[in-house]
Length: 334
Image (cartoon, rainbow, N blue to C red; front, top):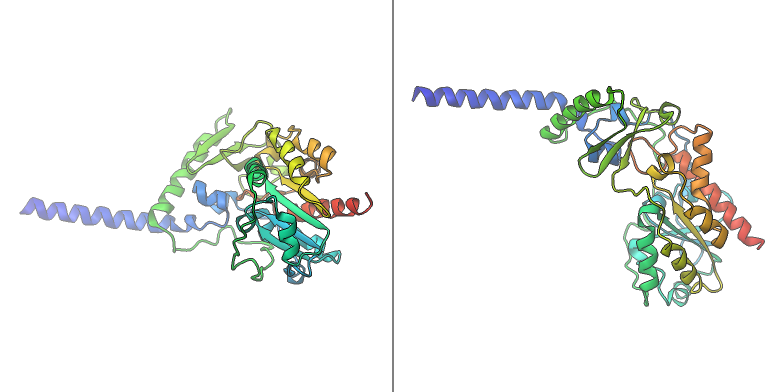
């Protein structure tokens, strides 16, 4: 009986001790970025600290299909409508739809989009590098449009944050997540202090890598290192993508397609010698966003991509918008 009592006291003390320790580290598990959340790394180390440009909400307005000059079909890089603000500030009316809703540029895309009331001349087709080969392949294989309305398509969006407090933690997460985040901090401190540290593969498809001149390019505290998706490929984009663009262009009669391919964050900082963007520009007048990222990096643009995220910062989105607007202007005189 006495042993059972001591065992119960021991278990209670262990649980209580775990709870106290976990509660102490819980604020570390307040994540603002997708890569910090996936990799369980604190914003205090990888959250961006340099303020970003402010955008007036009026430039983020969604136009109807009938009134739009430009139809955008894109992924998460277009969902916030931030790069589109460059177009709206130049007087263009823009409607943004997602690939999830559109499902592809099918054989009957032109009669379908005209039946929806779109009378504009330009369709911007945006895709992130890691998905572009599949996106293009699905479109080529698609025969009939099957539009799936998304209730969020016409919901108002708000400007992205200009800044945030990387130390502003809260106690709403899981206790175990705070402890695991602290263990990752301890492991990172040990690994990164070694002379030959170059990369670290974390759980949930996150890779940390040392970036040349990182502290000139990122504002987060651990600026020598950056976070990436581990499955981003260092290899060249498959050549079938270019062939499929040509096939899809043949479907887009009486309209000007603007093909926009966003480089993976890892391509911009680690594998910048890919030639796909040069070929897409030469053959299809596609905005060369890899060249854009390289020029920005060479100019030491801080937080072109956010340190804790796979996406552009507001600064990066506005540069992207500039390139797309230039492509539309160039198409007007061709």
